[in-house]
Length: 333
Ligand code: 1CP
Image 1 (cartoon, rainbow, N blue to C red):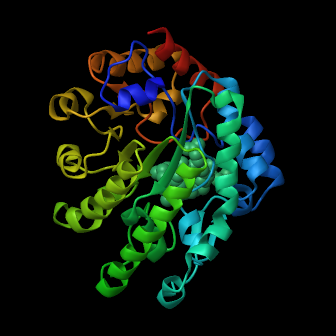
Image 2 (cartoon, protein in one colour; image 1 turned 90 degrees about the horizontal axis):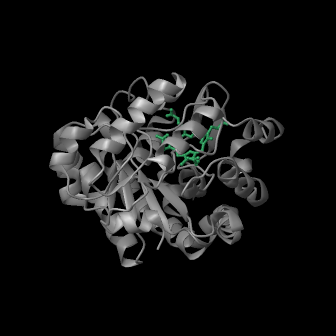
Image 3 (tube, rainbow, N blue to C red; image 1 turned 135 degrees about the horizontal axis):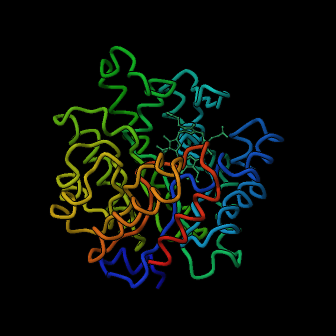
């Protein structure tokens, strides 16, 4: 059993395991070098040699407990034949949403399009750098994918007007997403993913009353499926106000908290293992402050099964030596 697996079955480990969301990415010069030569982000994700190399880059530098596969949650809409592009200084841009075409996607075509991701996972899993560590596969939660598929770009500012107008369309897409997310998860696991994380980055956009139909139920269906394959699942319902209710209904093996969650309060409310929390912006400050904030989380969770991580992804401006210092602080604790 790895330290992450021990933690996920609710066991406190002597050393707190650590991995970071977006640990493979733009803050690493060796990533930027590859990225410069590969302007098409989708093609980069579909290049199993490069995507496996990028996945392993942070493990070469830092003493992390897991690799997270270099891919994107939007590879699923891409596999469903919606056009997906990543524009510089803009982010993702999706094409027309054609329900008829998406409904006709068959499993074989979907898998053919995403096949390099599974090959990449296999390579990562077979590499010595991940020996006795976890390989984390992931998907976007149905709600967050629905947001991108209908909104067609990041909802950072706001959702398009009338987002909820076409209830038939929304319900059809949620059903299709559930089917293909299960297929995507199954193939990640078959090729060596030992933990699955479900990213619901835009759960916080919803009113409380809409959480059951768009977040709780669709996520619960995936969580139950992953559990049936005997693989642990971590959920990150970013921005929800009530993590406790989410955990009681969805019952993931662990929950990642965002940086707006007060760790002391959540500790009293949640019984399952907890992951994350530290504001990624702390990595942009100085070592003294980083140490202070890191020790705060470690102390609060010292008697609770806890996986160290952030409250959202590493930001591109982060100095790699700050990540190194963070990992060292956690390992020396
Ligand atoms: O170089 C570049 O311009 C590409 C930047 C980039 C990277 C490095 C994107 C575009 N995706 C990724 C990789 C990625 N995305 C990983 C790899 C593994 C790792 O964590 O190291 C993962 C797990 C994701 C997941 C992801 N993609 C999420 C969920 C987590 C989160 O950040 O909230 C989301 C929302 C996306 C969509 C997406 N893809 C890329 C960007 C810039 C975004 C966010 C767009 C937005 O702000 O709405």
